[in-house]
Figure 1 (tube, one colour):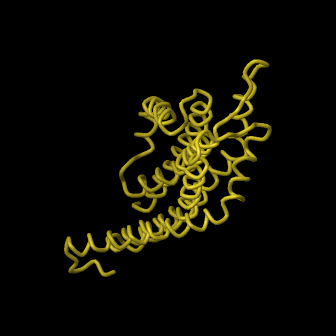
Figure 2 (cartoon, one colour):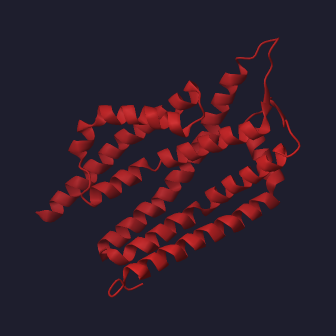
Figure 3 (cartoon, one colour):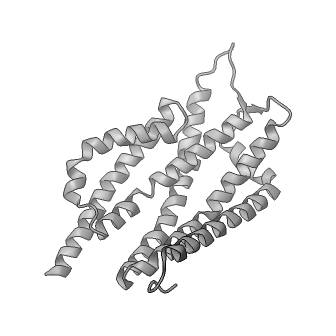
Length: 239
């Protein structure tokens, strides 16, 4: 879309169109996920091997399946969501920034799914093993399937978002919103923010929070390095 001559109403109409595309795509992918819900349920249960699951009320399993389908639909739609954001922003920026933003969104998608894969194969099984290990002869683990779906979904989403941090810092550095010196200066405040964010994004248990906070701090240190590389490159271009 040509940026020249566009009014506020035009921008709002464009934004509304892209939001509708996102919601329609989310509906379609969620419906498709619900069709394959047995297979998706099997993927979820695989992370809790050796645990017995129950549902406690007549509609609970159906609602859990709907929630699981919507969650899977969001994960599948995520690249399209990023593309819609990119397509809405690019008319207002220069050609070099367009390609840079496309690069960040493209690799940001891989980081998002990389975080989810990391959580699925490592973090969730470790968390489940820890909690199941707390059982005793008098108290054995018997999980509500709805609660477990929420537990798995929140961890997958949390790690997917957390792994976006390097790409976010890369963009902020490129557009002169942050500098590596500033990131280093506020490292201790970021640590506090990571702890708080981990408590918000993960289920209310200290193990899940620590398992998210650790990788997030490593990603933040990686982000400082990425920011420094981009910042040095910008300085060389000015010389």
